[in-house]
Length: 203
Image (cartoon, rainbow, N blue to C red; front, side, top):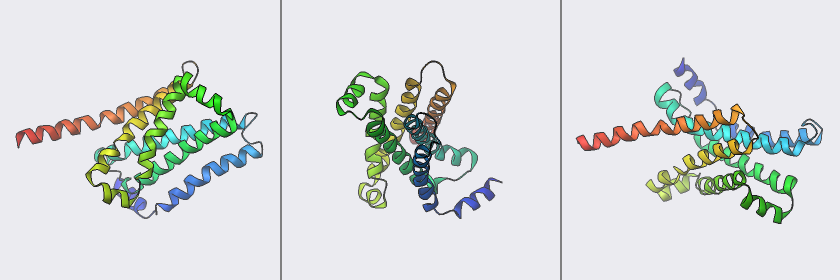
């Protein structure tokens, strides 16, 4: 069944993901302008974009474990998933800056005084070099350094998960589930590393 699913996935061009990814913020904006997002459309857009970005980051983090442990191959889409996640984080930030806070001095004050904003901004900054180097030219130019650089994805996911947990008021299960998934997916990297180290020592 997994092989059949992989066969269908191979037939889907990656540009489909980019089109769908670009359409979602446009759909949110349309809903906001036509009253489809309730009484506070700016907050709804801000939260929706941030949450979708975190979900995509988690999906990107799950690509390798899914292939290794389940056989589901999403490697073809990993770059698109990461680029769209960055696009949503950027859009989330723009909505916060331009439509929500609007006052530059207040933006800076929030970054300094609110830890969840500081963590969220740190996550965005970590993602910038990842987005800039998500192209074939950078992969060829950077060589092995590219792979090391893109391990910053782990930090971006963790910062995003903590940002969401810290952002919500009171005990809410959903942010904790996201953070738990991130920690669990990161933990899957360590056994492989230990095996590689053991293999090197035996050799």
